[in-house]
Amino acid sequence: MVTMAPLRRRRSGLRRITKGLGELDAEVFTAIARSPSRLLDTTMPALTRAADHSKLWLALAAGMALTGRPAAQRAAARGVVSLALTSLVTNQVVKRIRPRSRPDIMQVPLLRRARRLPLSNSLPSGHSASAAAFATGVGLENPLLGLPVAALAGLVGLSRIATGAHYPGDVLAGLGIGASIAVAGAQLVPPIASPPLPRADALRVDCPARPDGTGVTLVVNPRSGGGRAGEVAEQVREALPGISVVELGPDDDVTQALRRAAESAEVLAIAGGDGSVAAAAGVAVDRGLPLAVFPGGTLNHFAKDIGCDTTAKTIRAIADGSLSRVDVVRFNAETTVVNTASIGAYPTFVRRRERLQHKVGKPVASVYAMLLTLRREQPVRINYDGKTLQTSLFFLGNSAYQPAGFAPAVRHRMDDGLLDVRILETGRPWSTLRILAALLTGRLQCSRLYHELRVPQFRFTAVDGPVPLARDGEVDEPCAEAEFAACYRALQVFRPLPPGPR
Image 1 (cartoon, rainbow, N blue to C red):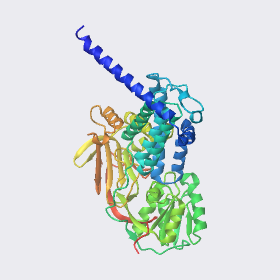
Image 2 (cartoon, rainbow, N blue to C red):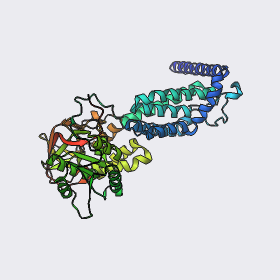
Image 3 (cartoon, helix red, strand yellow):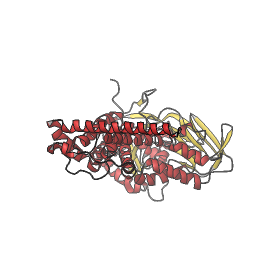
Image 4 (cartoon, rainbow, N blue to C red):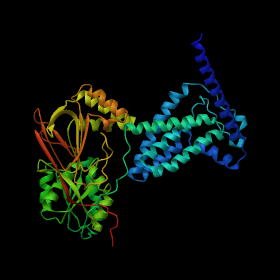
């Protein structure tokens, strides 16, 4: 009896606190509901209806996606994924934990009442949870967009109280749940950081304007992008009538065709995927020619990272003579890499993640793809810097990629003279479990199994014999030794540039 008394007193104290909070919650609701305000009467019902079924947030996400700005598009994607996950957790899990009745809607003026009072549990507010999740997701990727969206999310929460759908405590709980899930998602897939302050301005190269494309020879690989490269060529012909176009046949070798075109060209241009772009970059560097890249492939990573994600942007850069220099990578002193190289199962991991992320979101897709890759794929042993380790996932990039961790997505600069090397070590005890735990908790960068280097050169030896190497989306011949060297600002490339000093 003596030991039970303190426990009963603690329970009694908790009940009194809970009861007091509930009474305060009801009093605040009554104060808001009964406050005479023409502004609340006219705006709150419309706002709460707009947020039904997340219509408001999906419309905002569509608007962000249509801007064409990568930061806004990433913000929209993260906001929608956060919203979807929050809606599932709130409605299927949290609302079932503790039942709570809806407020007395008779206290709300008739003009302000919600047209349809939900029949589900009042705690927490699903509208508020979705609003907070979307706003937080947007803000994590793009703080400037996130600020007004957060203010709108707060107003949606207020509308749920003003129209009689929820108590203030329900709204606060919903806002907390939505924000927490979005932040947890950012631990799993970190937002891409804002571009750091440049260490040096992009190097401008004096180049004559070519408004009609005279002197430009365009090599087109019609097999790229499911025929998209051929469509690009037609657009270029119309905009730059002075251009010469060489269209590859089914049996033509891309590199040989580029070398022949370079013999008479003042500017070498390519319309194709990243593999064709890499071949063109190698020829352009060897011949000292400027390169123009038209996005004619499936992913067009290089074209996007230099700002030429549309045909019109490349046409404009040629017409204006907007020329700069970027880095390329030499592999074993003879092959050019413009984006990435990898060994092991990294290409398989990326394909699995991309196949799933449109259905379940990138965070879940990354974890599932990582699990399958680590379990099913054969690891390789490599030796570098005097140490030997086993890896299933090895990534090497031309210039530094963002974000950190094992989800590199974009480059803010392409002229830093560095290689971005990332390796997941899988040869230690419980390595798969440790990697997945670190990935789920956002601690991968702190794991001893994760190695990240920013170096001008990198060399490794395959311990157990030659291994296949993938570069710029193409699988190369197996190699036993690989040496990569960053070639600082070796490639002249047409790209949009901000106005220079006068």
